[in-house]
Amino acid sequence: MSTPCKAESDKLRQCLHEKRSTGRKCDGVMKTLEDCREKWRRSNDIELKFDGRRIIPPKHCLILNKNMQACLKRTKVDELLCREEINLLKQCMDTAPGVVVPPPK
Image: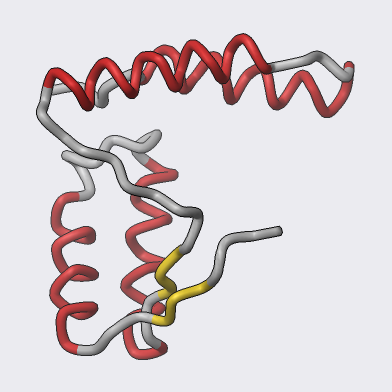
């Protein structure tokens, strides 16, 4: 199983990269990606409730978070190949609550 909306994500990353050097606008590409994600959520009965807050892992889980992020980077965000790292982080975070960080302003 491939990552949903991978092609759209790749196009957005490329656009953002070009934006740094050329000033290119990426609004259309972002809209296409969000439309794809919304379609995927509807087809998989997933309700999105996101208010911008993030949960930072507790200190004793930070190394596992770092390992998971490195795996995702190495595998180009293929969560299936990083399942072990993701599960280890989830288990660690189940032992202690993370720190809730408010949404950016």
